[in-house]
Length: 128
Image (cartoon, rainbow, N blue to C red; front, side, top):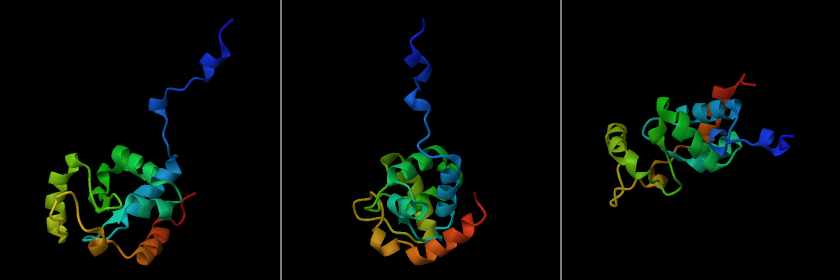
């Protein structure tokens, strides 16, 4: 007789920490961030109603077709492998790097969160 646990086993590498609706909400929230402004993973998470790590996961797997360079960690920093590409994009949008080169001063460039919430609600209207 087969071990019943074998049928319930799931490869953790195949799990998506967000469902398709949450993923769509994340991507629309990121698209609502205006040029020249940034938000943190936590800011997006607050809009969508999930955790910042889920936002980070979604962005790393599905964010390449949205304005991913406008989302940073809570300190305004980005992963090392993205910094070179971000420099060019931020320069075009008028966002200056911090002296340490790790990101921007998020307090200087954070999007208006109230306006972002309004724009986000408009962007996700009709999603079910």
